[in-house]
Each structure stands twice: as structure tokens, then as C-alpha cells.
Image (cartoon, rainbow, N blue to C red):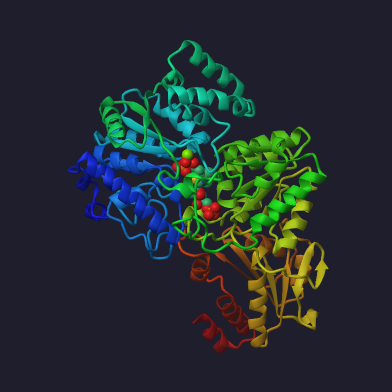
Length: 636
Ligand SMILES: Cc1ncc(C[n+]2csc(CCOP(=O)(O)OP(=O)(O)O)c2C)c(N)n1
Ligand SMILES: CC(=O)[C@@H](O)[C@H](O)COP(=O)(O)O
Ligand SMILES: [Mg+2]
């Protein structure tokens, strides 16, 4: 790593010779494989942007010039070149974030890991430069996947309108999101790599385009027409230049000199210009290049020589959903599935294998996913839209105004709900049970274990006149938790012998059932009796909950969601509406952005542990009993 360790900041790149730059690129690839195989992370995307990032930092002067990354998962090389080379605790508490981080460096601007926002940021920064009379450059790196997001086109529409406002857009085009980027223009333009590649594209493109909704066939005819009568690459220029953008490319994104030359031209252009770079995800690392699933988009800890995971992951929530979806698909021909460019991560790969004509990958376009689901439901089908909880935020209005207002039977399956941890603040699925509380007619399920995922998914797809939501966490599914009895639609998981006189009712939400049972055990040791109930459907609040609460002295709700407007708030409102005046304490995630760390570390940080909660409940009960000493102890 003789060269890499000499790079303390971007200006240290300036005096390197072409041979040294090539050697630096090799050292960076070696570093990435060695480091990320130890920690896990976005190995594939970063191996694909080594030369591109070196060229960016040689041509532009960060941090005076703003170098922006869409989604930010491909910013490891940027970090290496801007003074951050200790990757030993990447994505772990106290270590480097897996995304840009303003706290880490002045070179970092966008921390948000939600795709398709970079062009909006760039448009705003470019306008600010214009108003403030600054001639700093704004450079936005966006992947072909992120370019399938609607916000990217909203921004392009604005950027292209200002012919004299300098802005450089670099399309990092590796033909993939996770899987091949389909259904969008970005995918088909991206495979225009060489003239003979164009033949390959036309051959492959025909069947892919035929399966691609809307743009597919017309685009194929256009491109085919371009092949016959027009310059081979007129299509990309045509599309972007019709928008009013200067188009430069396609450029070999692994040829540093070529990228630098294109960026220099773009830098001097004096208006909005798009540099189209063709790259390979996982470049230079065979296990990644051979990974058909997603070219090592995001890996766990792996053996660097083979790329094989060090630990095999057990049954996780996603695989439970995946298996049940296949069963449902066999039983009901009206069930179709939607993903926003995350077929495998959300567990729809098996369904897609068996029912290829009943699954839609809409690209990174959650809003379109939700609206098209309203159309599918109105057309007589029952769509299941599987999406990470945090990414549903983006489609809230479509869920509210297209799905719920029109009483469409659509089921949203939210994976990665609750604290996810290592992907940082914008990846925690901590807002869904708050924002969805106000959607009229919506029913929200939080299954506690695998059996309940299966059961509640089935209950959800039976609802054909309202949106239903099933949400569960990331990773290994918890232990099976059986019910003692059912009350209304709720499962009582534990109750004292003398149920009528129990002190505390613990309302356990979703996968936190084991935690809540542990809380009850700790309370028991303090002589405090507790009932644990799993509402199963947290919205609407079960009608049997207020009367059950009335039989207790204190109600406690525990959820893996933001406290603000969460299930605790909804239960408190239901008790008030029912005239049940029992003190309630709601435990959940505080209203703040959580730094990256493991789920366990973050749950402890926010007080979602059995000892923390049991101590506070003990204090509350002691206070009710007038035993202030114990209450004081609990407060400590
Ligand atoms: C709104 C949103 N939806 C989904 C994701 C999950 N996601 C992260 S990276 C990625 C693929 C991005 O593809 P691309 O922009 O081409 O970048 P590449 O990984 O190919 O460099 C997806 C779908 C996200 N970050 N944001
Ligand atoms: C960058 C991005 O949004 C995803 O790749 C994210 O890293 C997914 O993480 P998991 O699938 O590991 O939860
Ligand atoms: Mg891509």
C-alpha cells in the first residue's frame, strides 16, 4: 500500500504519474477486498468506482468543489482519498460510517442513503453558487439504478432548464441496481457500450425490452432505428440532449485518463453536462464479478479468497415471508408482487422464479410501486409490495391518496422494520408505525414470530378494500412465542395466576415479544405481577384492549418504532376514548437520528432493554404505592 498510505487528501493525487495512478487503483482494490471482507459492506459498488473516484478528485477540488454521491454506498474510495483509511470498524459503533458523513469530513455532503436524491441536491447547490456568485463546481455521481427513481428526473427537468448554470452529472453506469436495472431508460442506454456491444445489446435487448412495460417496445424500435440509420450512440445523446443537457460519453469508467479528459471538458462547459461512464460492479474481484445475484452489492463478513460468507445466516424474517409468498402464489392466481429494485433482499426471488409473469420490478421507484399497486388492485388483483420500511416513507402520499382513499386491497410487506443499525440513521425502519397511524382504513400487523408472519400475511391478503401492512425486523427471526389465550384479536402471551388483579399490562409489539416476556419476569422478581399481550394488529387498536387494560394498574407499550405517534400513542388515545384512566408508559425509539452501530448497541442506547424498562416500570408502580424510595431507585 506504498502509494495509498501516501494519500492524505485529494491534492496528493496531483503529482502521481499515469503508472502510479494505475498502481494506486490496484492498491485500493486490494485494500477494499481485504478490509470489507472483514467488516462486511458494499464491496461490489466500491470496486466499480475506483478509477472514477480517483479521476473525480484529480479534476475537481473537494471540498471547495462539492463532490456528491447518490445513495452514498459507493463512497468508500472517496473516503480513502480524503484522509480516512482506517476501515477496521466500518459501519460499526465508533467506526467509519458506510455512507458519507459530515461529522467525519468536510468532503462529505449528503448522508442520506435513500436513492435518487443527488441531482436534487446538486440543483440546489448549483443555484446557491449562482445566487452567491461563487464559481465552485458541483459534481453529482448517480448510478444507473438511482437514475430509475422519479426524483432524479424531476431534478433533471429543472437542471436542464438552466443552460448557463454549471453542473456536472456523472452517471456511474454498471447496468445494475442489485440485479440488472430493468424497466427504466437507464438500463437500456447503459448497455450501449461498444458498436459490437450494441449488437449484443440489440440481441439481448429484444427479449428484455419485450418484457419491459411501457418504454420497452417503443424504445427498442427507436434504438433499432438508430442502429439502421443513425450514428450508433445517437440514442444517449438524443435522450439527454433532447432534455437540454450536454452529453459526454459513453466513457470507459475504468480508464483514468479518459475519465479525467471527459471531466475536464465537463468542468469547462459552463452549463449542465452529463458524463456517462461505463463501469463494472465488483471490478477486479472474481467472486464479485461471478456473483449473478448482485455482484456483491452488499456482503457480510466473507473469506477474501473465495468470497464465501464466514457465517451462514439462519432462518430470517425475509425467508419466512419468501416461502409463504410462494405458497400463496400457488393458491391464489390473483396475487402479484412488486419490488423496487430489491427482488432478493425483500424475499421475492423465489416467487419471481415460479411466477415470472406475476412479479414487477419497478426500479428504484417506490412511489410508482405504490400507485401501480392501486391500479393492479383496481384491475382485480391483490398486489403485495415488498419494500424496506424506511423506503416506504417515500411512497406515503401514494399509499394514502391512491391506495387508501380508493379503498384498494394492497398489502405492503415492510422488511427491515425497526432498528437495523449498521447502515446508519436513514436505514432504520423506525417511522412506519407512526406515519401510517393516520391512514384511514389501513390495517397494520406486527408479527411476533415466523408463525405469525405466515398467519398475518394470509390475513392481510384477505382484505380487499383497504391497504394492509405487515412489518418485521432485519435478520434472524426470533423464537416461536405461543399464546396462552386469545382476547379479541390479541394473543395473551403470559398472565399471572390471578389475572384479574395483575399490576401491569405489557403491550408487546411484533418481534419484541421475547423482550417483553423478560420484562415481565424481572417485574415478577420485584413482586409486581404482569400480563403480556401481543395485539398482533396494532392498527386499529383492538377493541378488547381498553377493557383488558382496565383490569390493570399500569399499561406499558414496547415497540421498535419511533415513540412519537407510534403504537404507544395510539393505545393511549384508545384508552382515553374508552374512558379508561389507567397510567400508561410508552417505550420506543426516541425522536432522533441514530448513528450507525449494531442493533443490540442501539437498542441499549435508546433504553429498549428488559432491565431498563423493568426498572422504570418498578419505579412507576412504587410511586403508585406511595413507596417513593423505590421510585427514586428506579429513576437512578
Ligand atoms: C429509495 C431507495 N430505495 C432502495 C434503496 C436500496 N438500494 C441501495 S443501493 C441500490 C442500488 C443502486 O443502484 P445504482 O444506483 O445503480 O448504484 P450501484 O450500486 O450500481 O453503484 C438500492 C436499490 C435505497 N438506498 N433507496
Ligand atoms: C445501500 C442500501 O440501501 C442497501 O444496499 C442497504 O445496505 C441494504 O442493507 P441490508 O439489505 O443489508 O439490510
Ligand atoms: Mg448501478
